[in-house]
Image (cartoon, rainbow, N blue to C red; front, side, top):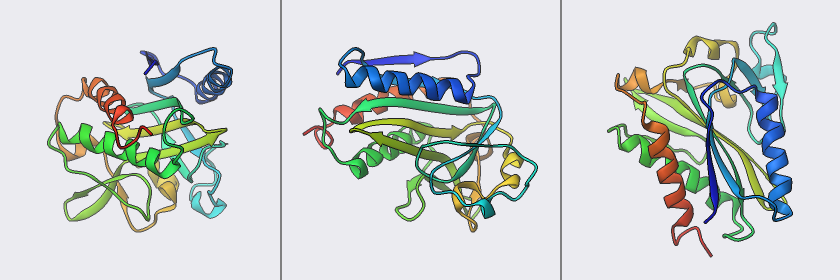
Length: 211
């Protein structure tokens, strides 16, 4: 499996990241480039997916970047790990739900390494944990599939400013909260991205996913 692993040390502008992924998608379709897993961090931005509603913006003064990924509205900023990808499903099982399951398992397996128990929810996409008797989201997922090439990705809250979520209804879910890894367990998460990439590739290669 030929996958480029890209890690950006400085924050990447959201618009630049989208352009980069869309170019890679075109190159993969023409067999000119390899698949991609890209670890980065964004500057502060609120993004809205294809199914968001205006009523989910609570603070009307914030700027919203409308994007073509699936999902609703969320926040990106410093202290949050972003994992983008451009993965060709043509040479794997053409099953979008199965691919989402691979992403969910990747995040859950990675956080389990830090003794943090999390779970997926079929009704509310993302990765959740039970924290102080509250169900809270720790990772958001937003994927788009174009001609059986999946791109965009997911984010994991490590040590970001959770007050930023007060301006929106995160991912359209009203009755659950948002948390971060540092709020759950105050550990060193410097190696989290390495473990995440390792698990992602392992799960992509698994016999469950490959046809």
